[in-house]
Amino acid sequence: MKRAIISDIHGNFVALNAVLKKIDSLQVDEILCLGDIIGYGPDPIACLDEVMKRCRLTILGNHDQAAIFDPEGFNPVAMRAILWTRQQLEDAPAGQQADLRWDFLGELPRRHDEGRYLFVHGSPRDPTNEYVFPEMGFNKAVMTHFMSRFEQTCFQGHTHIPGRFTEAHGFQTPEEMDEEFSLDHDKCMINVGSVGQPRDENPHSCFVVLDTDANTARFYREEYDVDETAEKIYSIPELDNMLGDRLKFGR
Image (cartoon, rainbow, N blue to C red; front, top):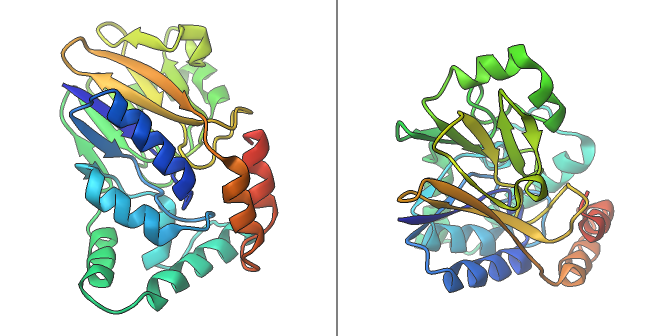
């Protein structure tokens, strides 16, 4: 089985469309989303509806959680964006689809454990809110603790920085692993990167395809019209212009 794993769409429908077209060309069996469908970007409702339709499993992200509960730990830019996002959901025409969106967000699981594979948004320790940054991969005590909390492989998002964490090798970027690698040996955590707001100085969307038969994972990058999304952001007063600017540089 081939499973596409996406994360951190952040209301960027242009990027999501490009990624889904690429995924369709790869003939995967199912799509999993590791959260943060909304927040920051200009098209939260379109992204939410598409994920509801296309993804077999979706994990709760911290921005998804903030849309239905009080935001915690958000900087002023993120706070304004999530409050605007919430208002879009509240102002959407009443009806079955509007109700389904709120139900969907309210029922998202914080983690999904299949034994061999664990799926979270943040970390194995705090599945919604904890960031695991690349430099943490070289702290052996931290990595040992994280690795003790799952059986073999953990897939996560949240930092928007793709790569693999192992106890033996610390953190490796996709380029350092030639994009594809086996999951048969060392325990590892895989950050699948971000569809809608990459932060590794590459503006192209990122996602992973897990081949459960071969037990391999492969990173993909997909180009999209960054300027289109940026212009949408610039046209919305409640969204800070830096949210559009950063997309152009992948940071």
